[in-house]
Image (cartoon, rainbow, N blue to C red; front, top):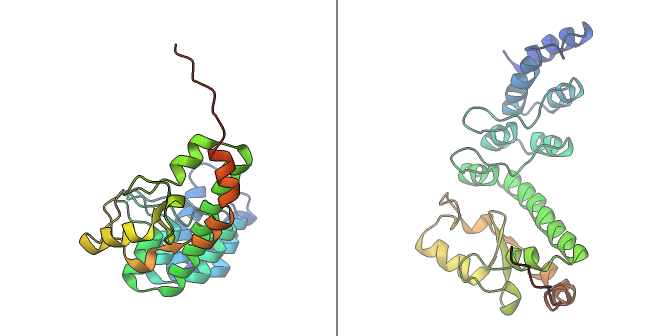
Length: 220
């Protein structure tokens, strides 16, 4: 069924107050995939209104965002994100929507997802600073390749697959093996998200947290 026809079907079901009954909600959930594959923003909005799960994964782990990323429907992804769908959730094979869109050459989708991921990671940094959570902050800001704190380097700082790296280290890694160090899924330079200025602006606050003395952990 095409998305427009599915809209009519869901609309009739919803009118009869049957959408929430056991089994019938899956009609709406499945319709989301057709709507996102078609880039039908109106259908996505209506399906959300009627209770469809916009983040429900298929057996292979693919979400509606993955479907939209595959075909380059950036407006559909923006609406899914607005309604709470995770634009960064990977499939079972480790491929993320960002990697899918990049491999397909959908630049607009790549740019949007990169901005969302950037915001999410920086929000996490802010949260850890506010909570003065030294242990997790140190882990987050430790380069996954050199295992050094990214603030110890004067070079650019980037996010790759939700992990923070020194750009020189991750670019050298990609040059030898164009895959993510964590997932071994494809990683290309256009997927790197520069956060140098944002991290450096927080350097004083980060240092204040890192300089605090943590209490010794009691042995059981």
